[in-house]
Amino acid sequence: MRINSLLWNPTSALMPMWFLFQVAYCGGNIAFSFGYVLIDNGSPFFNNVEDGPSSSVTLNESSISGSFSIGSKSYATSPGKPVQKFQGGRPFSFAELSKATEKFSPACKIGQGGFGAVYKGKLSDGSIVAIKRAKKKSYDARLCNEFETEVRMLLAVDHLNLVKFIGYLEENEERILVVEYVPNGNLREHLDGVHGVTLDLGMRLDICIDVAHALTYLHMYAGNPIIHRDVKPSNILLTEKFRAKVADFGFSRMGPLEIGETHVSTQVKGTAGYLDPEYLKKFQLTEKSDVYSFGILLLEIITGRKPIDEKREAKEKITIKWAFRKFLDGKVIEILDPRIEKSDATFMVADRVAELAFQCAAPSKQERPSMKKVTEVLWGIRRDYHTLLENRNNACMETDSMSVSSLQFADTAGHGAAETTLR
Ligand SMILES: Nc1ncnc2c1ncn2[C@@H]1O[C@H](COP(=O)(O)OP(=O)(O)OP(=O)(O)O)[C@@H](O)[C@H]1O
Ligand SMILES: [Mg+2]
Image (cartoon, rainbow, N blue to C red; front, side):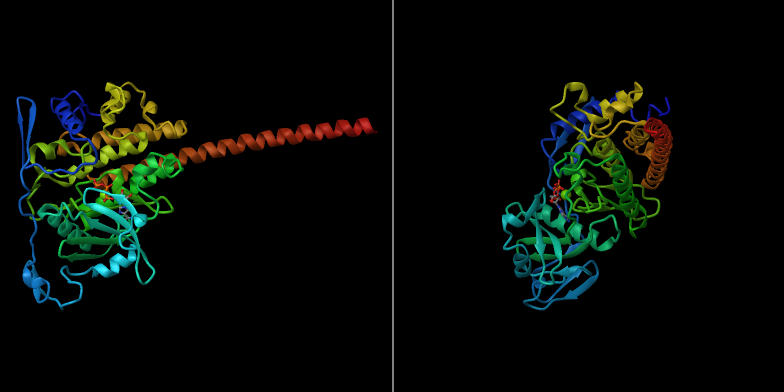
């Protein structure tokens, strides 16, 4: 067996509990927050508590017109103009965004998530943007923290595979984010075939690599390390050319800042099915929590199956468990999305991507590779896949040219015969 059984062991004590938890809370793409988790005699207990304060941005009465501060910096505002609360990013007025979305009309709505509704909007300069409006009814300190976190994250990052931040609105009860509009739906929709296109394995590998690049950038090159915390297909948006852009930094937190610090202690946030079991158990958030979610995502991309699929029979409900069994039994080809053609090339990809996915989703963070390492492995798989395809095409062309020349020979022979007869 090429994979160390410690890397991902479905029979380990932690795993059944973990999946039970994820199943119990997987009624949708819920994002939730728990104060603490106790693991007692093998049973998880979860206690809901209020989110503690997590923002370092202070905004008081004077921010509406006057001045406000972010950390140690102060900013002046002028009455009537959108408040420039964050450094960078464009502040929008409610009137501007209302006009851009035809008064937030349902016709402009393109999605709905935990944060609120997402609209496609047209700004006065003609540019098309995505406008994320926080739910007003449930607007509370949690959303406020989430909004501020997302704005600060978006301002700090710049990468081709991350959704670009354009601006924001923070006015009375309104919290709105304006970001780059990514026109081709989200990855889950494509895996479900909603857009009428089946993603072939080459396209899927490119998407995996795009996401891996985005996460490597966040973890290693974005100034302070950033942990995404909600890596999942609905947060991966596709361009017209089927390249991926990672969205939603609403649940992000900065990674460890001090040299020597290895993790950030924080409330559990994320989406059931993609959550790192170690993070849930110990509240220790590191980049490796994203690696875990990425492993689950890899399996979803090659199988087409959600991490937890209640509709399937018991032994297939937990995708990673089912896939690992197949992998051990040497039947990894059976986990491949049935819409993908089966060949030696796709078999090779299924085998190696599955192995990588199990490594990423290892129970303990020490056993998981870094996103940089994952990216390198994916590039290797991509290269070998294209080499196999090329070899196959060359072999086909050789066979074709051989059969063409034999046809020509037959044709010439036939002509000869016909000519002979005519004469
Ligand atoms: N920048 C964007 N460009 C185009 N479509 C987007 C954009 N952002 C979001 N969407 C669409 O809106 C949908 C809802 O997004 P949102 O992030 O609010 O929720 P979600 O990702 O589905 O769930 P969750 O709240 O758990 O993150 C997305 O799935 C996507 O299809
Ligand atoms: Mg989202």
